[in-house]
Image 1 (cartoon, helix red, strand yellow):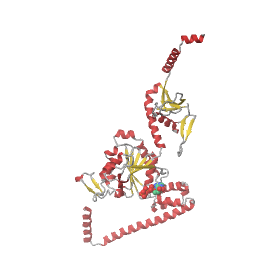
Image 2 (cartoon, rainbow, N blue to C red):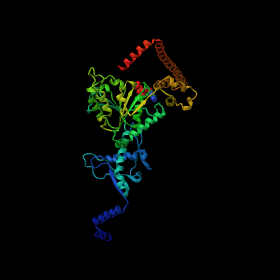
Image 3 (cartoon, helix red, strand yellow):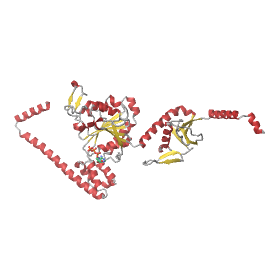
Length: 471
Ligand SMILES: Nc1ncnc2c1ncn2[C@@H]1O[C@H](COP(=O)(O)OP(=O)(O)OP(=O)(O)O)[C@@H](O)[C@H]1O
């Protein structure tokens, strides 16, 4: 009787309406607001859902007590996911927010042309109402950026090279790519630790410097010139840079590029967060044997190949590529040029502002040798004391590549490696000592010859020298 009375007084419609009202009142007076981010918007996948999932799965932000761990095939990293209906707290700009992973079974029949998943998934974000405007938009932007960054880091990076003769691939792309898996890092790179830290700091400043470049009105790019003898680690340095910043590499083969406009097109097809490399720039095109064109505009140089007309890349084209208007299409790009002979490069390429940092990759020094010994033989700093390496290493002028060869050969026998390396260093030191002595002797002989010449002859020589100098 009371039930039917209740039904009469409070019909289901009225009950539903009052419940709704109650819920609204509670929400109105509650100090929190809630946002649901569903996996799909009915048809399409919701990118924000994926971004939140990736963001919450990054180990740094995880503080939940229960997580689902997954690892995909061929992957070396574990992914942490929030378990079903579990929550975790995160903070942003001093405000604390709570995430809940809500999974419910789908009961409605699946009439869609595309089969829908069995479960409905969503993330619910709970935050204080007074933080709503402070946090919401910038927090979601932050999550999207962070997820993009994580996605890039988890993905294989790519090594691109320009196709032969400027041909395009099936997608109309002028670059061909392969996964980039070079193991060189700043940790394994043998060079002066102070110089190494300077380069790493410079790279980090660049990568985190968007606001700075924006503020100063500069294009967000940076140029490095690596120079030094073969085998001193220029390519290893480029790989270490790419691994450090998680950037892709575009290895530009200049000899395959025919015109400046082709060069520009290649540049336009590079992505941001990448390193564009031109190795052995002095061998790629003849930049020194140039003729001035167009009546002396200092940028208009025919850079090599001008005589036979086969290669029409000019120095100005190359400079435009690195610091002209075209270089600014896209952002966050690093240009690296390498050369074994810095003296052969045109001063225009070396002028300040063109290449922001000149990095000398030198013959192996004692601090660099310590790193190689640690990497190859697990020998610590103290193990090398008293062996006499410090006294010969600079004189020997041996490259890290040569030293690595000796160490690899003897890596199973540490003491033999040390003895053999010492012998090799001594032989090289002796040779380079003799070479220097010979050069010194030739110079002395010339001086002696000059001293024996008559005053008239000397005067004539000076005139000749002067003429030659003027020419
Ligand atoms: N500074 C270094 N630190 C660690 N390993 C090095 C270094 N330099 C050379 N090596 C070793 O020698 C090999 C050759 O070095 P790399 O190709 O980087 O030299 P490079 O200066 O680029 O030579 P090239 O001018 O001939 O291209 C590398 O695979 C690496 O194992």
